[in-house]
Length: 239
Image 1 (cartoon, rainbow, N blue to C red):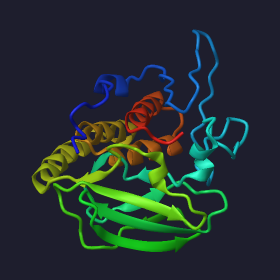
Image 2: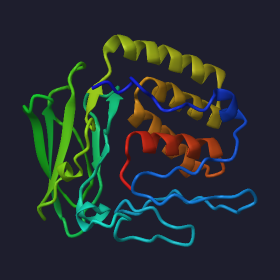
Image 3: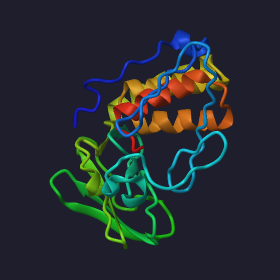
């Protein structure tokens, strides 16, 4: 899995410190909206329990925007994390979308050769920590989630949607760079810079987690929205 072969364009660090207005991104499943100079735009990032993105006036839960009913958010337990990424944690947290009517989920982790490494069943939750033997670097892993309603994350047919553990040597290099950033920057600038470091090294799940937490704490940072939008689009994040 060559995750870092062609990364999305990164906003220069200077623009993170002095951000420009956010770019409105659109995934394949979202309609593209034209915005003209002078338009007033209100950004809403909070998600409901079903993974839907609410409007500024309130949460609108229900069907996804795709016309094919078999590919709506409500019907497929899309893998949220890890998704098309390298990881630092060899026993990662696994997350997926809730499915309408489902009360239990069967979660499996497989190697690229199809070998089953670990599985569990959970009820009324949409995340679980991998509890098998520590995962190794150099291996492509896949998370598969099935529901008691018959839905499966495999219905998404996402090519290259697995994950790998970053080799120890590269982890050490990133830790050194991260330490330097934390010593020289503070607050939002530090979070933005750390996220950029992770993104540049294919640690997309780590970058998303940082930027999402920043947006939840402070929704007045356009650069965080811009970075998240570009990264969501790059890893084909569910609608």
